[in-house]
Image (cartoon, rainbow, N blue to C red; front, side, top):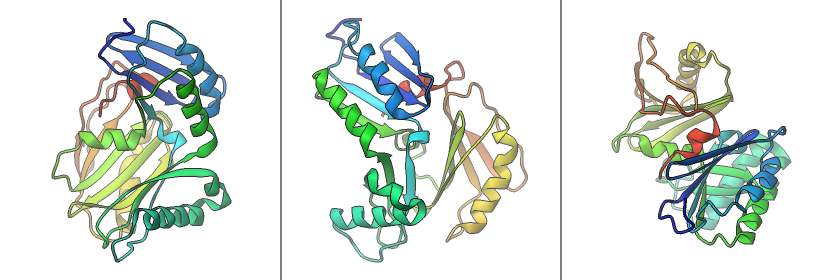
Length: 254
């Protein structure tokens, strides 16, 4: 690998694990602590390796490190500042004062639908940005798994999308071109067995009827086959069955 490689350095950050991928090179590092902050010293050391080109870096965060919210519909067009305030208030209502220390990004939707907010603890995120600056990394992006993986969906998608990674699943429902429902929960190795019941529960809670078509996006789980359950149409999106854990995050492209 050359410092002048045209390939971006893709980094996956998951609980207790880092993966760095550039071209055909892949390196994994492990931490005894699952927190995001515990990964930063490992990443700092890894970026000292002259084998990596740091000209462009793309970082994907596990959903374990992200909290998402779908706000109530604002009913009118909002400024960016008003959107951020609405997302912050909605996160605070669910998570309490902890949400005050989170950095929030907002995905706009039409006024009749809620806003999608994604929040990350501001302290480790600032530490990550400081670390990158110390390595003179000027071109970089930091994105949650959900925002990166959702790009694999068909352009005219209506139905349910489920991203599943080791230990966590994120579920989003879309109807008439906008996101109408959002949920997330911890999962174990038997998530395929419990997924139909979870979907039926969330469908009953959704504000509008959402088509019973489900796209499953496995991330770092190995090979995942389709699910047979009456009343739902199931489709497993393409995934690399040979890649596990954080390495799957590092393999995701925009």
